[in-house]
Image (cartoon, rainbow over all chains, first blue to last red; front, side, top):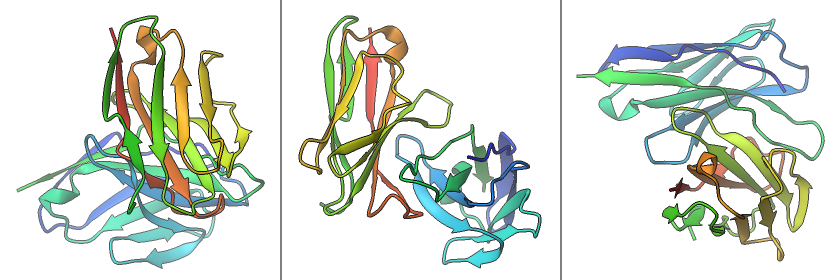
Length: 112
Length: 114
């Protein structure tokens, strides 16, 4: 499973677009890139997943370049309630084991 | 229920005491995972079930940790002779199938060993 590296923390302001980049230089062919969001005292919540190019849902967009060595989570027009820790994970579809390997995540602070 | 339910939400145990943490996954979800999350860290994998079969327990830190899911629904994580280093939040997650991208997490059980 891919080891991922992302910034420890980021600051933003309400209404701004926030881009969080994650490095995964050793990502395997079978690995998907998955992002989770975690609020204090809550379990993580799935945001988005992609394999390559661009994926968009009602919450975020995920950009993965052709070499797949990095990915960028884009949160449009953040609000105070987007303050949370964001985790980038490599997730394998191989075999029966679907366990996720988590890093430290990026602590995003959205300021008024 | 609508989501993954864990109980208790908070547990304080004296060192050496045994504890049992319960997870009620979303009905019909085949896969169930347990994670341990220390303060300021990301979750760390403990074990994985597919129905009642425990397919991976490689993350269990010692033989004091034991998990079961006897009927393929509710799961219990048991920690025997708790130590201070066991203090953490224990998260349970479930998904329809192991290959599903989205795992649904419970709120966790915060265990404090004193």
